[in-house]
Image (tube, rainbow, N blue to C red):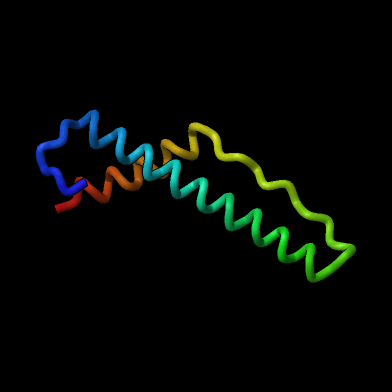
Length: 71
């Protein structure tokens, strides 16, 4: 994002990609945590990790966009 001449569409596309990355990372950490909990306790029932939805991506992207707009 060092290119200051990006169009609004390019910026939004980058932000959506970042938002997806954030959500995928979060889900991966949650899944790893569930595996670690199960390893430590044989009786532990792993919880299902809810997948992210489009609305989640948009919420994160909006937060990033708001940050970018600050001067």
